[in-house]
Length: 151
Image: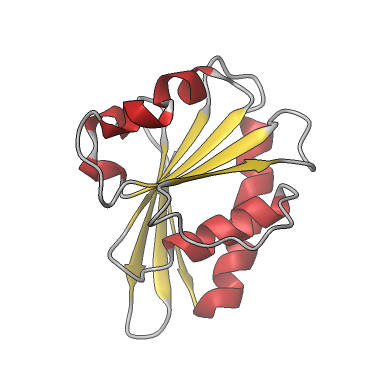
């Protein structure tokens, strides 16, 4: 059974800090895997999925500016601060449909236990529904946002 954690955050800075803390914890917890670590980012447009990804990836040593991969669909990053994971892939599946992930070398990426995959809009493609994926649901509130983690 999955464990659910909910937290209320006020603003972008708190979201980035929370994602950074989460990155440290989840990578340590998942250091011995047989496949990639998949983190599904679920939420409406503008909810904070990319902001979460930014905090997460910066914690793992990505120095580049993190932006949404909306138009390129997938971005690949080398991880410099984690001995268990070597690369991260940030995917935006908003414009995809079932089967499209396979054109992005999905099968090769998912098989490598040294990879982390952050996928926005995973509900749009069947291939992204991976057993063992960590689900992060982000919801707008009147003030701030709610993050629910199922891991």
